[in-house]
Length: 80
Image (cartoon, rainbow, N blue to C red):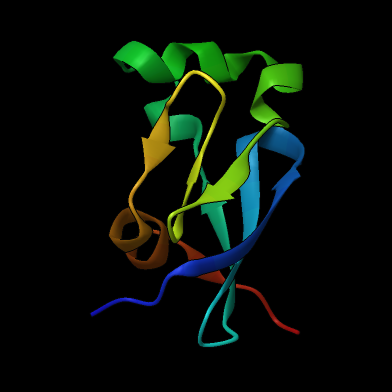
């Protein structure tokens, strides 16, 4: 079972810095999803920055979200 998101921070170029409950810090690149349906709205950088932690994952005000599994498995570890 993959860990839940404890903290999320938007970064440049549609990336998210994510801290998981196991203290791992990873970077998630959202760019491959930006042309897919509801994620299209994330292209607006000001909107993208409104990301927040929700139920162990992340979401935006209009309910776009990524599961904790997607975030954990598709993210790259960041050196601390």
